[in-house]
Image 1 (tube, rainbow, N blue to C red):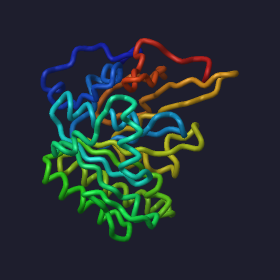
Image 2: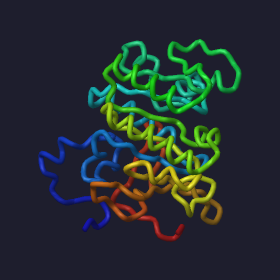
Image 3: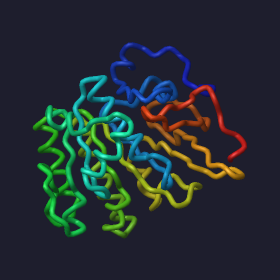
Image 4: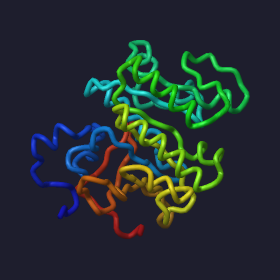
Length: 259
């Protein structure tokens, strides 16, 4: 069993099957990285940094490991995403210009405004249309990583938890079958639960929860690997910082008093 950070030796075969996030401190908590061609849920309340954590996974994949990426933006327009992450020094437009990254605008037409983006999901919303566009884009740039930001807007459209579970399972399975290691973000309003609608964590292979809790007169950030199928991982809650260069997880520190 792991005590805090993962410390046991990783076999060469296992290491080859791992996708490194490149997020300082995180890969140490889960045996060297995420398992390839699987889908992970990134949950958290507003301000926890779900989108930034996930984009760091995509950005690092391209710039550190040569794995092209896809971002499906369902809640923010791509221009907002590009602008927001420039503060970390992540120039997404440059990666798009090099055909290493595609951002699919699945937001603008849903709220009734025109989009000047190259990649736009302009059809009436449905999981099938989203999957078709992801498949076409993956083939075009040979992507290995993907981000769906977020499942919450998708789930609000579907409403019924049974439908949400079925449609997200279709999406998750498709991403895995076509060879994408993916993250899906999920908004939380109740931190005692790992997902918003109670089903999202059942259709993904892992759940990572980001906490942004108030303790006395200050808010503190911490994270927990809630589950990770096929891999052991830290069972403890670890603090993290959002720095000018992105997320830094502290794998050898734990959080007690907040919980």
